[in-house]
Structure formats: structure tokens, C-alpha cells
Image (tube, rainbow, N blue to C red):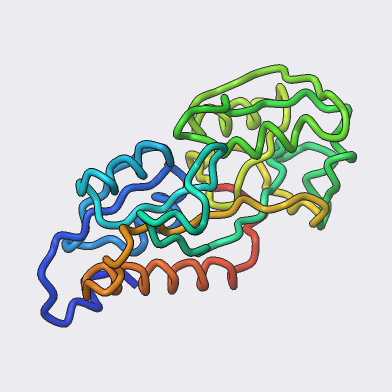
Length: 222
């Protein structure tokens, strides 16, 4: 699915930006020689678009972010990503087909710090509903979350796109649909979607997203 396979004589590079999970799950599978990738949070991605330093950004909706009708941008939803519960492989919930967050209300929680490029802020918000959980540990990168969960001091709520190191003794358990998924948008400067290379980048990201949504949730993280 990489962009090079769709090249058809187009000149590059197409400069894309995105937060960590969007890069690992969407941008990296689409990227090829025609793409330059930059990892950053949504606010910086939007600044880079305005400055003309990237042509396409994959972002999360953020508080204080541009409204859908912002005259500067064309924004389109590309993926609604379910959250999954990450538990140690020997945890009682590891064999469940799906769980409600209430099932893990008594657990110690490991969260990725809000405000970093490594995590959607929704994770922390969802963990805080409907009661105040015990936040035992916080990390700023997904590999640290994976390692903490694998070694048993708690569970975590992560986007399905999030990846950790292979070999950790963790299991992903689907979370029931009582909570909104993480939304990922594509964002380009208004009018630039008519550029053939930008249009192609949007098309390929959409193909990757549709293939990802059609795949089953992988229960094991390794």
C-alpha cells in the first residue's frame, strides 16, 4: 500500500506529519521514497501546515483546535480507532472476549502522560470515568507502558494503533463500545487536495485505514 506503488510519475516528496500512533499505524505503512515524515503533536502539525512546511497532517481533534469549517484547512475523518485494555498475560481478564472499564475499576492503572506526543488525551479521560481510578504509574512512551504492564504493576488503556516492543507478556483485550473511540483526521491546507500528490497521499492513507479497520483486534501484543 505504500505511496510509491501509486506513483504514476508524480514528483515528490510529500511531507507528512503526525503523532506517534498515527505514524506507526497509518503513515508508516503508506510511506515510501516519495514521503518525508515528521513526528509531532496535533498543534505543531497544524502550525507546520500553516507555515507550508508539511502538506498533509494526521491529527487528533484537540481542545482549542480549529473547527471543521476553519477557512485555512480541509479536515476529514480517516479513522475511528477503538481503545483496548492492555493487561499482563496472566491477568484474569486476559482471556475475556471484551471488557467494560468497570471490570477493571479496582486495578492499578498505568497511563501515558497527557500532553505528550505519545498518547491521545482521551486515554487519561476515559480512565477517570466513572470513578477515580488508582493511577499507579505514568509514562511518556508506549514501550514503557508495555514494559510496565508486562511486569505486572497495573493495566493500561491504549489505542489499538499503539505498538510496544515484541516479546512483552501482555494481551490486548477489546473494550466494549460504551466509550467513544479515538478519532484521527487528515488535514491539508484548503485547496491543496487538488494537488495530485496530496490527493494521492490522502487516498493511500484512506486505504491503509480501511484495511486496518477490517483487521481483527490482535489479542497478543507481540
